[in-house]
Length: 435
Image (cartoon, rainbow, N blue to C red; front, side, top):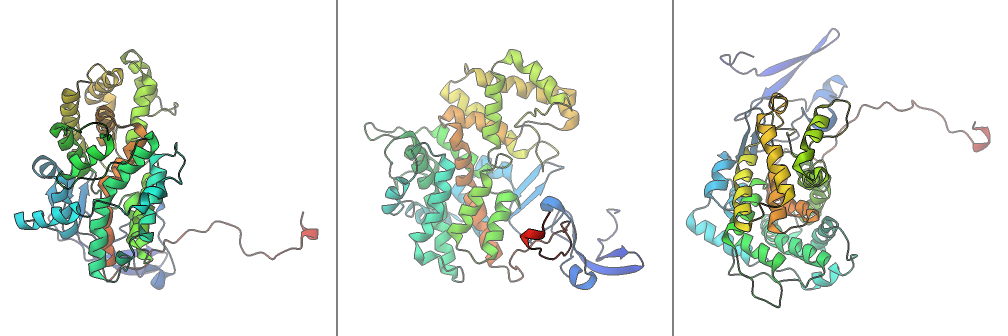
C-alpha cells in the first residue's frame, strides 16, 4: 500500500462469487490488522495460520517489536534507553502501570516488592519432595504453581486489589524461588533475602552466599544481572506469554498462569536457546574447529545449526544483543575469564558472523542468547539455571500481559480453531467384525 494513502478501513474477502467486507484496525505503530472476529459467523469459514504467526490474538499497549528494523519498545521506550539508564524495578513499574515512576512512586514500589521477597516457611519443606538432581526448571514450575496453595488472599482475579497483591508477590518472590531451586540442586542451604539490598544484588547473594562466610556484593555483576533482567522482561506475544494469556483467559489464578508460562519457556526453541548456544560452543570446543562447523552451518544438507545466531522475529540485528554484548565484555573484564577456551570460541564465532558474507546475507547476527549464555557462565551459573533466570526476568512481562488481559472487556476465553483432516463420520463396529 502507498504510504501516502490513508490506511484502509475495510478489507474484502472474495471466495468464488461471494464477497464479504471485514474491518481493518490500525495500531499506533506497526501493521494494521484485518478483524476476522465475525468471519465464521458470516462465512462459515475459519482462517488457517499454523503457529499464529500472522494472527493478532489480542490488543496490547505493553510491548512493540519491529523485527525488520531491530526495534523493541516497552510502553514506547526503546530497550536501549531503559537498559542503559534505568533499572529492573523501574522497568517493572513501567510494564505494570504504563508510565515510568516518579521518585516517590518508585520508592514505594521498591519498598512493597522488597517486603514481599520472603516465601512461606513451609515452602522450604516443599522442595524436599524433589529429587536432588531435578532440573531447576522442574523445581520452579512446581514451586510457582504451589504458591496458589499458600496465598489464598490473592487468587480472586475479579478483585483489583488481589490482582495487585499477586503481581507484587510474583515479582518479589520469583528471585527467592529461583535461588532456592539453584541451592537445592547443588546441595547448599537456602539463603534468606535481605531487605537492605537491591533486587539484583539480593538475588546474587541468595544464589552464591554460604552461611560460613560473609558475602561481598560485586556492583559490576549486580548491574549486569539487573540489565539481563531488563532485556528479558517482556517480548510481546511470544509462546510463553501467549500461554499465560491463554491460561488466564479461563479464569485460572495468576500463580497457575505463571507456572504455565514457565513450563512453555522451558522448551529449547524458546527459553532454552542460551543453554543450547553454550552447549554448541562446548561441542565445537576449540577455535581450530570453527571452520568445520561454519562449513556445516552453510551446508543445506547438514542438519547442524549454529545456535545463538539469527532470530525468528528480528530480521535485523537483535537490539538486545548490542546491550548484552557490552554487558558480556564488562563481566568478562571483571571476572578475568578471558582464557576460558569456550569464550575464545565464542569471540571468534562472533567475529566471523559479523564479517562473513554468508552470515550477513542471511542476517544471522549473534542474538541475545549467544551473549547471555557466555555472561551467565562467567558469573558462575550452570547451564541448567539459564532458563530459570529467563523465567525470573520474564515474570513481570507475564504478569503485565495477564493483568492487561483480565482488564480487557473484549477478551474471551481462548479457543483456537482447526482444519480437520481426519476420518469422516463412520459407525462403530463390534470387535468381531473388525479386520
